[in-house]
Image 1 (cartoon, rainbow, N blue to C red):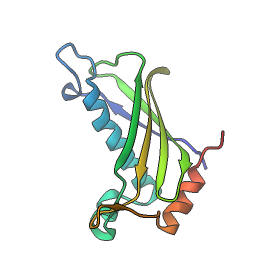
Image 2: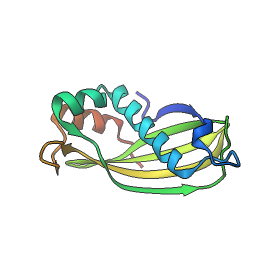
Image 3: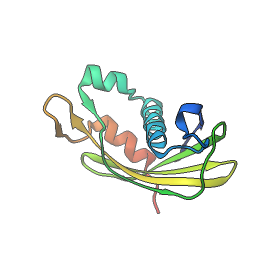
Length: 138
């Protein structure tokens, strides 16, 4: 099994400012969509875990470094790796590129959360096992 989840996104008109440059809040919205796609790939689509199982994965920490601007119409490649799995959190590393050129990167911590009590909870056993299988060792 590969330990990098890869997907692409085309920058659309609404993702960019008046100059055609990707607008950083749109980047974060796109990143959220990549996370949603990753969880579905793992077998835990958000619409099921949120509505049926009543747990979610809110972001509790996020850092970003922007290297090179991206422009309207370009296709970005998102590489996501699991770099730490805790009792109730997971740290993801995102590398975003366009045609092999690094555009930006992000480190993000998600926490398992009970959506009714609004508290962190341990990962369900099957989820923890799945996340551990994706863990990249340095």
